[in-house]
Length: 101
Image 1 (spheres, rainbow, N blue to C red):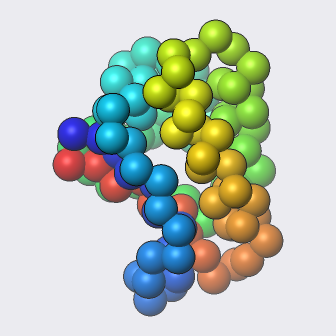
Image 2: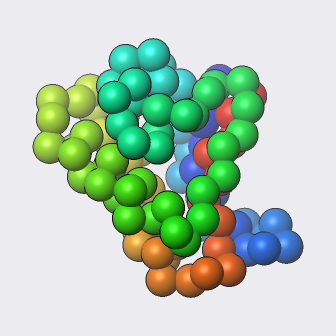
C-alpha cells in the first residue's frame, strides 16, 4: 500500500492530495528516506503529520532527494508534493499528512 500525501485543515478537511499509487514512498522508507531529517519517520503502516514549523526541514528533505538519482515513481510523488509543502509553510493552520495503510 502506498503512502498518500494530504494537505489538511485543523478540522481534517482535505484541500489537496497526492496519491502514491506505485508504493514509491512506502518502498523508500527502507531506502532513500532513512537519512533524511523528517521523512525518515514515515512508516507504511501508519500516519505521520507535520506542521508549519516543520515545513522548512521537509522542503529540504524533498529538495535534497530530488537532486539525487531516484526512481521515476518516487521522483514524481515528491515533485507533486512540493506545492503542498509550499502551502504548508505559509499557513499555521494547515497540516501535511502522510497516510499509510
